[in-house]
Length: 344
Image 1 (cartoon, one colour):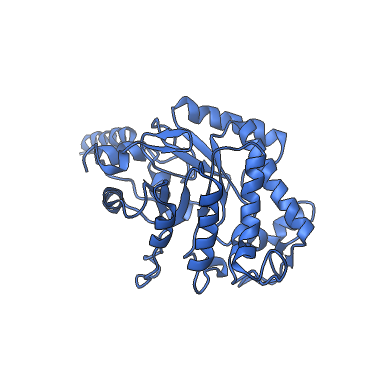
Image 2 (spheres, rainbow, N blue to C red; image 1 turned 30 degrees about the vertical axis):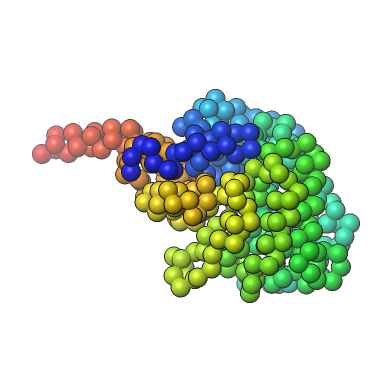
């Protein structure tokens, strides 16, 4: 790939000018112009003053490198660890409806309407805290079978009140969350959706009508909405999957559309140059193992393979901050070569 390939065409997302639209869920802001998105147990929060102060050190460091960082806001609903809920002030195990998650002994309780309003308020509070902590914006997590997703999809939502029973009602909670975030003063925000996600018992038989309504409602209500973030079907798990995000690209155009799921440098460049997978191509796994991924992509340097087994180690630097930068890797290989020659 050349250093002027389509992956590095400048794109404006909200008020942030991205020199290269590469996304990750951790702190990889060493290359100016990088967009970072962060956010069970051992997960950082944004609901009290101490957390806000701690996040300031992170956002300051990212901004010092000339990069941007958005906080990803989510509530787990029935995806939560029940034991952690019990430990943390005996919090209730809830969802849109009392639908048991495969492999769980517990059945979540359906949220009452007043409780739903409390969750909407909690998202707004987190958005205010994100502003105070210095984040450039927020991304609302409406995917992965988390709470917003549990309201959107009929495989979980069996309600018959104003939050269920129809496409419009299933969209209501997610749209109210966005409204509350705007009312809280956040002007730079977006949402992530995984329509084709099959884990946590998700994926409607036909998600097109539901998500067409939801995405169209966002488009019409928020002309300054930074972007919409969708994953592509997981062809690694299901090579025969024929699902497509093209209907949503058509709805969202010409606004920035972020496309994610298993990209390599080769197919990412192809997608960006064709323009058929969205303006922004997102990397996750390869950004974990390559802290200077933008530089490697731009200079066509080899990537360090990632180790999935270390992705979620708790309170450990292994697999998190111990992957080398390209220059460090070259120096280490040269040193090893010298030592090997000395042994001969």
